[in-house]
Image 1 (cartoon, rainbow, N blue to C red):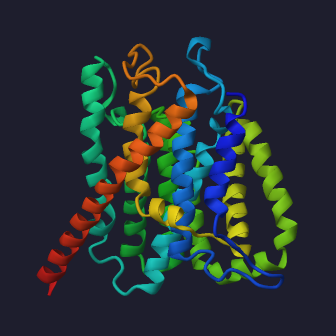
Image 2: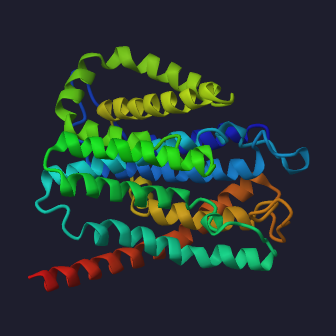
Length: 357
């Protein structure tokens, strides 16, 4: 399908901007970084991640010719940009809670870890089942759930945040701890050869914390140079994507630069465009569950299941139908999972609160 890239991109952007309100000249969106607004953007990103993973399974330039199907090749390199937003909003949101909520660190692990751990272990058996059915062997347990690296990463960064702000009263020192923790994570990933995607955008977590700390000053400065910043953000993001195709230092600089400029671009757009519609709100409430659950179906319905030699019996050759099927099945699996997840978290926090009195 020669025009599928255009169709998918158009529909994806329509999903983002449907119902959006553009601020008039001299006006700004005061909810640009509010919880509801960022959740809507992350709902958009969650669908983008699905498109990206489907593109990797079908249209990636590194696939052998017999496994390559054109149609989603535009989306093969964009995954790290979307993950950068998840890291940024995670760091930003944690610090916002610290600023605005009393005793925000109380029951920290119950609030933050419970949803992550439950969603991971609720979906993991399905990947294990796929490996059993298709006799996939030799896969390290860390990679049984193909996209679970982000879960391990965010668990680590939540811990680093807690250590920094729980044991150091000086906020600058706490942020330094988070920065050192980020450096440590990058080094660990490099030493263990875990793959670039494990660490090439994690610096946005600390940037999110710093942005939250100095939010008023930063937003004030951005308003003054708003129109000047947009062109270089677009150019540098595109340049970073091109650089990421190289190897070594140029590739890493490309990842680091474009992830920062892309996040800044989204913030700038949010300052002038108030985004929100029922679809974005729906997906924004279950980004975690959708992220993990869709992988079951992107593997099951692709040519191969987890390993190249494991040929799927449920392969959907039509790439458009494959993408739609993964999104629909992922949604149907993620929605009830998100409801159960929220109930477990609420029940646990209620019990801890009663016991703490």
